[in-house]
Length: 349
Image (cartoon, rainbow, N blue to C red):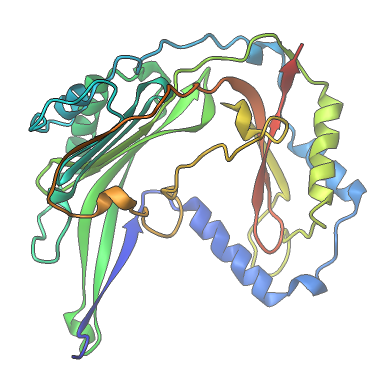
């Protein structure tokens, strides 16, 4: 049998910053292999770190705890929020994962996690419906988030992207076509105008205008008690030490690279487990790729179309929600691949 068509998933994005920079990094690395690039000295790295550090003071510790918005979320409320029909069988008490035919629902209230997938709305080459416009997509998502009771003051500006695909003919290029699959709306989180790492909400809207999948990871915001700021020079030395352990090579100024900073840093809040000091287990198990990456979001085991009976699964005990600390998110534009470090700006008394 001859393969006449090959479907390629892609993502049409409103702002593809990382992918563009990544392309420059890749070209630069190809132009001049690592072994031919000079290693940076500790003095050079220290100078770069000092230039990159933003200002901060005690006010970063004054973020107030948020309301436990997700404490009472129940499966029926999630289905109502996404404008879906009720379960065929009422959910059992404390059910965390529910399979209802082609729908899968996961709810962990204490972590602010909600996952919904309706596989009957999966895109198909045989059903190419026109997607709703961006404004309508935002209206649909806002209604869903309000139905969940999410804290709107913590919303960053939403972005709308389009998950698309390309039907590449292997016999005649003229038969190839690009098509739109889902309208994707993503909202990140901000507290006191600073980003909150590890928190995000994303919704995919099918051509029918219905929500095909929703993923919310938005734990109630609670600052760790008894924090005090770490001295600025201690923070700077830790960053330099970690960079020097990587035998740093900068691509700034290398032919093919449009980078201007070897080190950049921004203030944020993060679960303390995300920092190196407190890390015991991986801080974020979310395997769905960021929207500003060049590939489309990955599917998980729930995104498989199956006609299944109602099933319930529960955790044996509640999960402790994270506590947050102020951090520096440090990005290092090193060869061959940039990386990020999360550095705590405060410690317990």
